[in-house]
Length: 73
Image (spheres, rainbow, N blue to C red):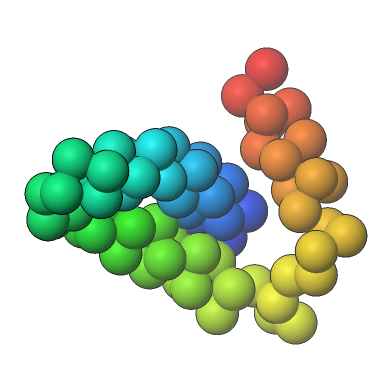
């Protein structure tokens, strides 16, 4: 798998885990499953940044999303 795909998956998983973290905190529960998903997302993003020569900049992230989506279409 390419570093671009790792980055996109990591960002999407992190985005979807935020409501879960907030829900667990508001219900006064320990966010165990949410914490695991955040760690997975962070690991994917870290793997993508380390695998990509030169890393990524914030301006490149929209282009990365488009490249990954275009690859599947």
